[in-house]
Every structure is written in structure tokens, then in C-alpha cells.
Length: 163
Image (cartoon, rainbow, N blue to C red; front, side, top):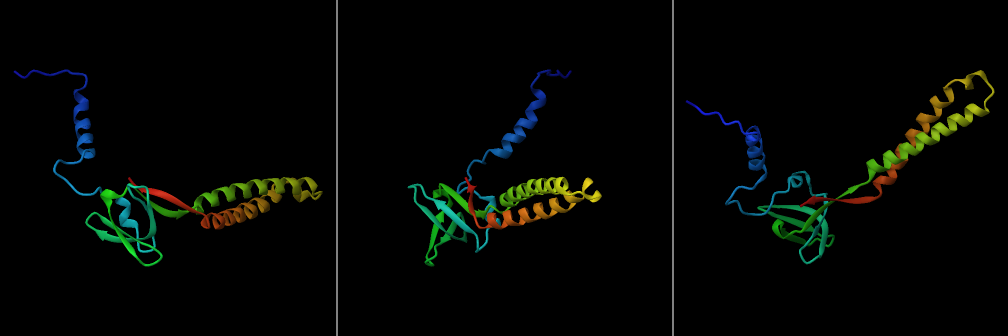
């Protein structure tokens, strides 16, 4: 007859094996590591590559293929780098989203304050309700969001995409 093994870790063997098989590299595969974000980069993308000796190359991304990438400097010269020799690769972006969130939050606070201030000073029956807030909150929050996004778009940031 068949003997049933009642080991407490037996149900975990298959998920652990699948997880290890998906994360470990296959034997015999050589070459530079793949960077999934490289597919989204275009000729207008600005990258900064840090080499093993600590030097940094900054310029426009140039697709080279076969584990290589190009960095075109402002002078027009293109450096071809092997991905295996690149310590880090950064992509330049902007702080637009962060600026919009901060500006919108500050605008919301200003809208609440001015709505309360107008309601406190007004003697008309209209001011007893929420009408001052219905005007001040959208105006200040919207204006703060736009101003914050504009300021954030002017501030560059670097996002590491490799390793």
C-alpha cells in the first residue's frame, strides 16, 4: 500500500520551489543583466551612468542593444557602455507630482482659512452657511495645485533604474 507522509512543511514545498525557480538565474546564462526600464527610454531621455571608478557620464540615452547602452553628451560624442560595467544608471525626471500635492494641500489650507475669515466678517444671511467655503476652497486649492506643479516641473530629480 501507499504510505502517506504527514510532514508539517510538505504543503510549502511546491510554492517555495516555484518561487526559487522564478527568482534564481538559470545556469549557463551569461551576459549583462537586463534592465526592464530601458524599453521605456527614448532619444529624449536623460540618463546618468556611474562607472566602477566613480566617474559619472550624463547625457541622452542611445539604444545600442546586446547588453550595451550609449550616452550622448551635449558635445555630440557618444560613449558606449557595457551594462556589466555600469555600477548605477539613473533617469532624470521632474518633481511635478510632488509639487502639485504640496501646492494643492497649501491651497486647501488657505481656502479653508479665507472661507472661515470671510464667514466671520460677513453680516449677511448668506455668510452663515458654507457658501464662502464653496468659493474659496476650489479657487485656492486649484491655484495651489497648478502653481506647485509648475514649480515642481522646474526641479529635476534622479531616479535609479539600475541595479
